[in-house]
Image (cartoon, rainbow, N blue to C red):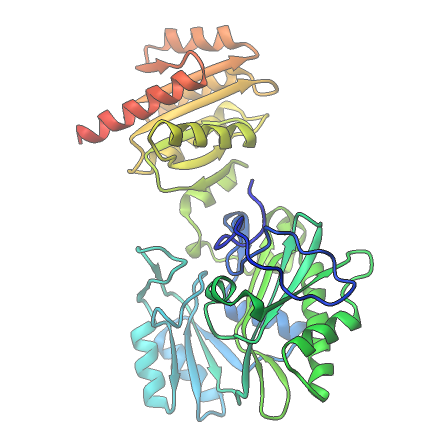
Length: 434
């Protein structure tokens, strides 16, 4: 639906970064870090789960234990040697430390106080939005001997069809700010899928980070194992911020963020077990049960469309005429009346939806099937908001006649432009009458 490059500065330009000879030319739009724009379609896991995956592949991580209550957090802390222990909120978002979700504790009393304060809190970060996310899990981790904090990440660059390994000396900071303010401090290498990550590339990254001696070799081993995880588990992103160099020169993942391609989850049974439905939008979870492609947005016009391209165009034309879409919802080319009914139920479950725009071009998806779904939805869940329907294509006359004979208060769109204009006007009128 959207490119897999990070969202913060996607499409913006900054001066070329210095890359070693033999590295593919840098595509101009690969400019940022953090949460990729398409990650709403990715499966996310918690830090403690990502670190368990790292352990399975032999990557160094501090000792730690997950906890699902304050009492479990205290018990988990007592299992660690200490004296420094870290209490971490576990939510599917970055920026937890800045939001107050990470506390470094010097003794057990501080652990108990931190666990009590963090568990159950509504944690707000730059990735959760103003509503925040409730903390239902904690991770209690042993302290680490930190000599340096670095950044390490892997993403797919769709422009080149290659995975890009990114590293920076500015670990522990908001990496989007680093990319924007000091892009020269970010080093990138592109990995040829035919040969994988090479030893010389690992050395290039290690030297760019200022590593020396035995740490260069250890870092190279770390990079290769992270790449192995990325490939084996169909990742869409792997990020460690900070990656720590200890006083003895060891390389340790002090944080871990790993997302997976949702289209590959069916074949990753071990990753499926990590899924936390409490962290996902319940509407998107419900849509998944019916194989509907749904993404919740912040606007006021609900969209029901067939085909991803038409869905994107529908959202664009709604914005052009003055309204924001409330969702992306593609019912696909083989939707049944049951799926269409489910789609309406999901859209109507959002109180911010002030009108619904059904925009169907019937090819494989027939217009009479959509009409039958609309009528069935009205019977089962009721349509209590303005509904605008634009049908075109296979069986369009049958579909239009079915809606006309249904007695439903439907506004008909002569074409896409007319339908969008009517949907925007209806949404504004509905909102004014609330």
